[in-house]
Length: 75
Ligand SMILES: N[C@@H](CCC(=O)N[C@@H](CS)C(=O)NCC(=O)O)C(=O)O
Image (cartoon, rainbow, N blue to C red; front, top):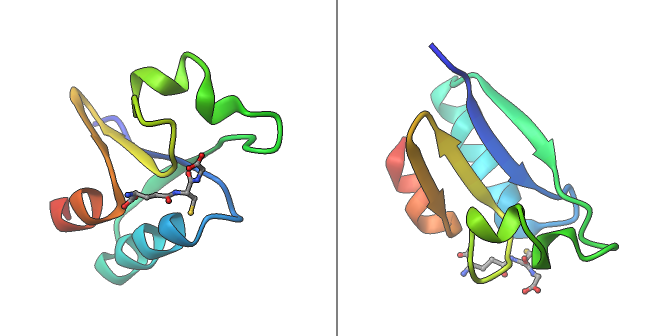
């Protein structure tokens, strides 16, 4: 089974919340860093994950989610 992917930045407090939930549930995930300093979150391909251009974004197979509350409530 493909591992869940969390796209974000270590500087993001919103991502920190999602990471805390993943660890609390003991779920395996891959962290995909998004370089916010260079504006990677405002360009494709990231915009196809979150059209608002904000981290975090999350992919689990065919499921794509963005927004810390939507992601966290998925676990
Ligand atoms: N409503 C979003 C807010 C996420 C958010 O504010 N992310 C910040 C980092 S903590 C961000 O991507 N800021 C860059 C921007 O807004 O351009 C959520 O709940 O996840």
